[in-house]
Image (cartoon, protein in one colour):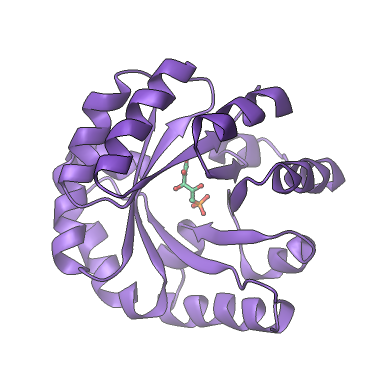
Length: 218
Ligand code: 5RP
């Protein structure tokens, strides 16, 4: 049976009150909620606890893109109610291992953020450590400089799936992009600006779900 990708709302606001307004409006229309890197840096770890309080039932991601101090930062994220926390792919294995140990104590998961340089050998090492998830990411700045999705991305995603890595996809994603990923096992499409900055965010969320339902019919 085909697993249907979920829709993840990334909150990348620089103000917590604005992020909370967005989540109040959109939480019934999304499956996963993310305290984005920009929000966590701007508002602190209380962004995670505030979202957990607002949305007790949703899977909640702390997108900290941790590079060091894995256990300390994981303790911060998971104790405030996160279910998943991101670690940057450039982090040492020791950081990933210490973050994972804390995550497991809270029955949470670590997601590796795939940016820049990494190899499939790295991905095997993350998997062998016990990390199940990764996020295939086209960065904001890369997108702004003209980087588009291409066959190379799809081939790399397939290679990761073949290793057993569960993949979420993000980076300026809009509903019209989704058919490109039709042959990829996607855990979640992560959308920030396409939802939060839409003229009508609820309509935008519905458009994502319609596209997902059309492409991943079970
Ligand atoms: C930036 C991020 C964003 O949260 C993610 O890429 C989604 O945002 P958008 O859809 O606006 O690109 O992690 O590093």
